[in-house]
Image (spheres, rainbow, N blue to C red):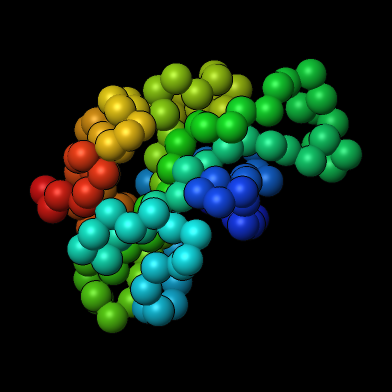
Length: 139
């Protein structure tokens, strides 16, 4: 589950949970994008996700290094009710194995402009599209 997301340095979000579950979504208010989100267009915003566990609470991760970039979280209008928002996340294919844990991954083709492969499908609301050239492209 995307857990304990807090404001990070600019366009980065810290994740307290040991891993991000691919495609996990949660409801969010329909208020639009947060100021820290990167605007992809069509109501979609993104935050990059790093892995920085609190080792005092999670001593099992004491010997594993922090990772500044393991995936991203996309907020979007719900596909089944555009008046509400939803949030889903993905992990990149070059994230360390202890973070990915055998779950599906996506390829970060370019960071600037952002292009990710394959498409992103929200398992909660059905929102589906690509991130190409820093923009959301409906599938």
